[in-house]
Every structure is written in structure tokens, then in C-alpha cells.
Length: 331
Image (cartoon, rainbow, N blue to C red; front, top):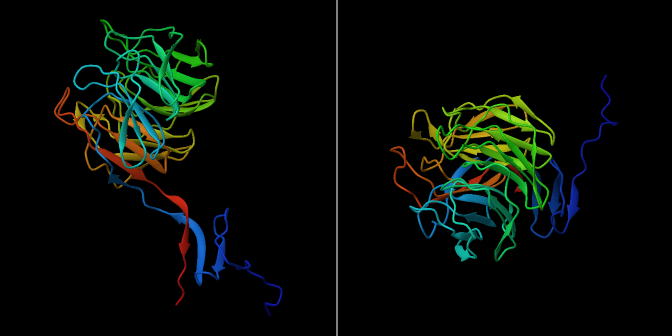
């Protein structure tokens, strides 16, 4: 016969205010609100409309988070030096880049960003942003365009790109930034430009892009070398959106083969990609990216038809699954 006297479930805390740092699955009773509460994953996984950009643009570069984002450069329609800050509800102009550029690589936060590479003409120029102004730093080793970057202002990775002159070949070059200079390191496995990426200098992810055909190839960076991992579900390039970490990434938008815009969204769990049923409201490519897998921002870009359809100034905000305090009901 089963004895129940020794079985004990999880204790329910009785508190006057919600715990500051609850853990997943924790339950408590709040005596102030007279509510039974818990902490669990809430799955939203959808895009919502954000505040439009002051000017329509494409090939701008993003950094920071969804509610503290920075975008800089771009084509509108020529290359611009514009820098904009986003606080989650409005855009503010701030100090301009020293070198107008589009399709640049970027890394960092809203108050400590790095800009490098870009076009027209192919650029090696590197600049750092202190929250107000841009400062010129050491040039990159290779002159390329549409290079992907990730990391922070003082420790970044720049991967891939395209030669700025005929035959306009994609490259597999990778450079590492230590805060004062660039060093060539091990190359990526699939040469590409217009890719997406995320992570830090010692743990990054590179995905999608042009080879020159659209690709779904994904590679993981461990600080020393690149390893090819499972591909995304949809091949696309021409600067799709990307955010997150090496083990929790988000990909959105991009150009499908041959040149149709898409709003498709995929999530990476460190092993494989999963297609999310909710796509962006406006299919686009050549967009800027900021944020994480659970909280991201896609701003501007271009829609179909190719090679450069109408520029857009609309902004979309992504809310993914996240641990959240919820009110529990009983019946």
C-alpha cells in the first residue's frame, strides 16, 4: 500500500511582494495583491509595429538592444553618415559617422559601438562611438564590403564580405579587433557577404548570406576557428536580420533566391533552427538588426522588386518566449 505521509511537494511561499529573482517553476502567494503567482515561460514569438524611422533607409547597421538601439550609416538613397538612437518609443539624431557608409559591419551597444568596412568603394575605416561622437581608429586589413560583425566595442569579429571591384568575389577572411587594431584569424568555411551574425568575440554565430547565391549555411565561432553546423531552414541573403548569442539566435527577413523579399523568422537553439509561424509584417532585406533572441528590433530596409525596391522606414519589434511572472488561477 502506498504511503503518502512522506511525500512533500514544493512549498508555496507567502510573501507581501513578488520575489526579486524567482526561478522557473516557482510559485508564491502575494498577500498584498491576494493573488497566487508563478514564474514560467510565456511564448509570444511575434512581431509588432514600432516607431518609424525619420528617413527611409537600407543597408544601415544596428547595435544595442530593442529599447536602446543604435543604427548608423545606410543608403537613403546615397551613402549617409546619419546616426540614430532609439529608446523604445522614439528616434533621436546624434553624432554623425566620420565616413559616410552603407553595408558596414558593427558591434557593441548604444553607447559603445564599433563601425567598420562598408561602401561605396570598399572601406577599411574603423570608428568607435561613445554615446555622442564617433572617433576614427585603426583601419581593417582587408578592403571589403557587406562584412558581418559581432561582439563589443573593444573585442569584435568581422567575417566575410565581398571585394569592391570586379570580379566582386565573396571572401572568407576573418579579422579580430582588440580595441586598437585588427588581426587576421582563421577564415570562415563558406565565403559569403551580406550575412547575419551575433555573439561575442569568443563565441559567435554566422548565418545566411550570399555565396553569391543565397545560402542557409551556419557556422559557429569558438574564438579560434569556425565550425559548420546545421543550416537554417530558408536560404536567404542580402543582409537579413540577426540577433542573439551563439546558442540562442534569431534570424529574420532577407532576400530569397533569386530576389524576392521575405519576412520569415527562425530561432536557433544551439543545435538547430526552427521556423516561427509568425513572420514580419513587412517582408524586407538590407535591414538593420539590434537585440536578442527574445527581444529584437528590425529597422528600415527594402522590399521587392529587385535589385533595390522601395525603401521603407517602418520598424518592427520582436517579442519572443521569456520567463515571466504570471497570475495563476484555480478551479
